[in-house]
Image (cartoon, rainbow, N blue to C red; front, side, top):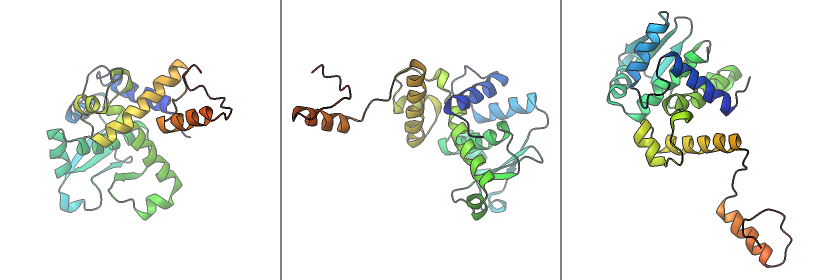
Length: 207
């Protein structure tokens, strides 16, 4: 079943709340893993030599309740590198969402992932939840810039830009506001209005 953005925000917040990290900005990933092992003794993680994991950066195995990650990803995660943090958050998302099977985050999607609807759905869901775990909406400051989100939460520029748009959309809906039109569309409509074409859209120009 498809989960809304609001549902995923609450799932991420509840996950962090369970770990005692609901209001902590940018906890390191090892802290998250350690606290998860404490609250759920069945959860495990494993470091794997890169040569033994050539096709994926990390993976989730529901049968063993275990996350495996390349040694290079583990080291990068410890250094706080954005991609490694996101990779581990992605696998933690599979855990939290109770996804079944052996799933992995790979730079190239496998034929199986593309062809099997369930796996595609689960990977999409994990991709959406992971940045919410790393940068929860409830602690992102109002009017935070992309650079603010990068600095505060350890996301890449690309991930921070997407996260900013997601947070703004959630907050607009909460306030009952509509998404503002792109400036290029506003300029086009204003020019049409100036030429006498009836325009029903509120352009905020009081004319």
